[in-house]
Image 1 (tube, rainbow, N blue to C red):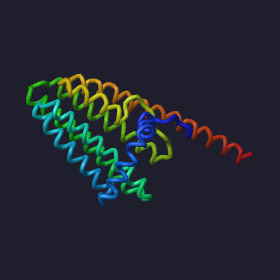
Image 2 (cartoon, rainbow, N blue to C red):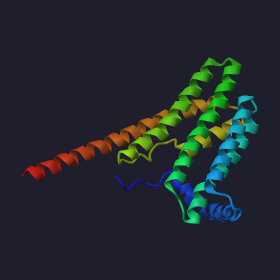
Image 3 (cartoon, helix red, strand yellow):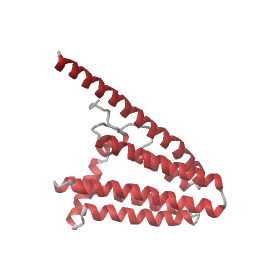
Image 4 (spheres, helix red, strand yellow):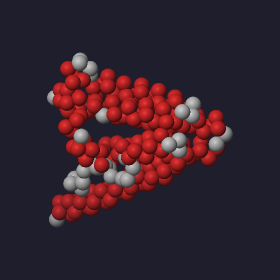
Length: 212
């Protein structure tokens, strides 16, 4: 159970390490902190969500892309400083959740203004699925399980969202995320369920050995 294949996000970090490290080092030399970069990315996401809420999908998409790229440097900066902290990781994780929800809020507002009830419902389902994907992982890890599985993690959600917004297809974007996001949450739940059964079986066997 502990020997999981690297996720798509893990592979991206390895592939782009040669780019992330020099830029991360430069930002460190400027005196910026990882947390300041995290918050800068969140501010950028909020601006992008505003453009999206006003129906300016392409502009919003490019602002989102810039924000996601900026946010990619906080972990690299912390690692290069030799001071990755639990609190820094906590801030980054919470900021990521806020960023996604703010983005969906922009889409939700757009569909409300358009009077598109189906768009509103699908956007809500997309937001719920995205939050659940992250929540299931966090809750599982809190119980000693792993849950880094699934077809649509945060990076993949942006890979779906941003190009479709560039081409002014917000409904298709939220539809795909709603469907695949909730499937991903279910995949993680089932993955944890299997680990739970294994743990329970192991505990029973240990109990039998102890009694004998």
